Image 1 (cartoon, helix red, strand yellow):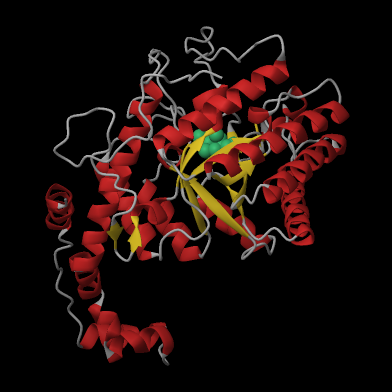
Image 2: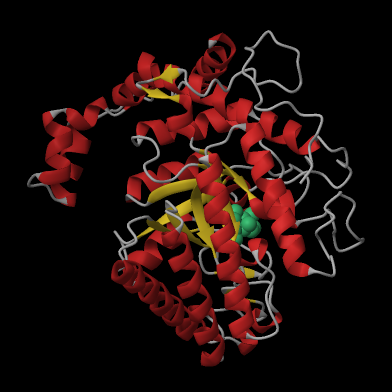
Length: 441
Ligand code: XLS
Ligand code: NI
Ligand code: NI
């Protein structure tokens, strides 16, 4: 097949911060060692199949705008094969180590379950060949349990157990394919696992179903010997009005309640964090603290839009703060940075997909440098340590673990204590972060 991206040289070179070549990296230098690991090993970049190749720019007000000739083609399988060739051409030219997919992104559903499975297996075989040829690996795969109309009221949380079984079949097939392809993780984004109105919803039952579904997936993962992480992806709403996995705290409580901690981790999407009213940094920190941090879907929201715009990350400050928490927590293990990020509908030029990814990768690479410097120089850590120093004194320790009562504290407070307010130093620390971002090279 002739090249789909003929104007882009292979692969995108690293040229450094002074370069003004738009088709070069200015910050992402794959083999550069930062804090003991190469940038490529730290960040584990993945391109997502769906927004990049399966989506042709359609929105609810109009049809596709992007040149994706395989979308809607009559010969669906030939189209799927062409799409896959183009996807791997892109992965190779961009120089990313990983990609991610939904089952339906790589293979169109057939007219019945049997044909759907045949088509999917055929495309998995082809993916296997492309992966061997190019060395590009699978960061994670997932089953799409939200587009088909049967999932209108959820997959695992559906009022009909037949739908639950159908979703189980789909995940079973997809998990096995991910395992076969040597995938590093398996994601479950519960887009429709929630409700529109409590007037028709048994909220307790639905959560029990969801937990049951997750435990069946875990059981199967162990049965087939898949050792990647099972990742759930919190999101507060959209498409459902309320989603059960609304944020990391809700997921942590859910896993605790159903005794699934240790088996399930989270895939944190930056803009889902924003939509849930949190910072990306907060979501990462909460996950690291709960021991459930897994992977990241890198994108950004828009200050004035209340939905999942999924645009490419461009804020070095936002990503630095998140990356700082990731590094503090020990970095990625099997997870990585997936670009669950999409072009704008007007980005119809052939190379726009490259500019989007180059910009996103540079934003995150620069953030890695800043976060590594913040960690290494340790000023933030010292400030935090200093702030809580009182808890390391005899008195502080005694409150937490010793023999005190509310009443004994009352006595102490009225006789000796007169705590003096101290500055939280927030502005100073924010300036420190910005100075570090400006300084790193
Ligand atoms: C949608 C989600 C989705 C998942 C994969 O908001 O981010 O794209 O990442 O199903
Ligand atoms: Ni996502
Ligand atoms: Ni999303």
